[in-house]
Image 1 (cartoon, rainbow, N blue to C red):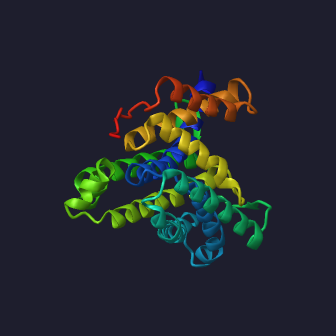
Image 2 (image 1 turned 180 degrees about the vertical axis):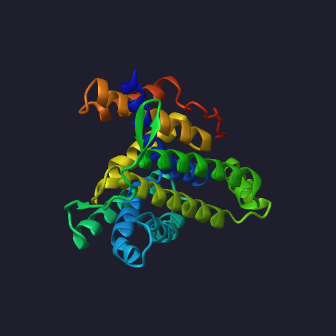
Image 3 (image 1 turned 120 degrees about the horizontal axis):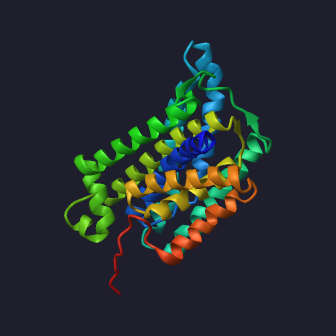
Length: 295
């Protein structure tokens, strides 16, 4: 029983990271109707930024987790620049054009990292201490607790931002009706840019939490992580913020239990099996709405 509880807690940790990253997917899709496959590589940018800023931060006598701040700044810049240069010119083009562009941007970021940094993975120093918390006889690492609490807190803040703030309501309006939002005076281009900025900031935080659990950085680290986060967004109902969080937690728990009780080699297969089942049985996800489009 203790082993089962421990695996569920481990699943909540990786699920928390999936949830943070999937928030970026679901927000961008909700406003721009774009599946930003380059979002996973923003995680890679954040991880490298945090890694290279560690010596300066340690030299200033600050804790290593402060490296998340330069990671957020650079990821937001990357996210906004990519949106302006690659996606904004295709706003009125067929969606397949934006999708192909997103894949191209993803490959570009990966190859730039391999060219200028190298293809080998680099070790990341320990962010949290080795001490843990006692939970019903189980010792839970500090990084697990910090990851889960931070994810839940950020998810609540994002939801409050969307429902209570002026900018959040503008994002909601744009996601519901792009044309009508323009007619009532909402600057939809700025709204979409803001969405990319928020998603990129969440990806940066997710990247630092990810390397706290798996302490190595590589040019391809964001590829599979981004795809799994996309699966979590689809599972929860892409475009729905609470759904992205729930989907991330479910996916993390399923992955952890699969590795523990079935096979670590089949963990990724089960993730994509979930995607196939959801698309066949419940294509709108757990919390998604069945919205019909006029033709």
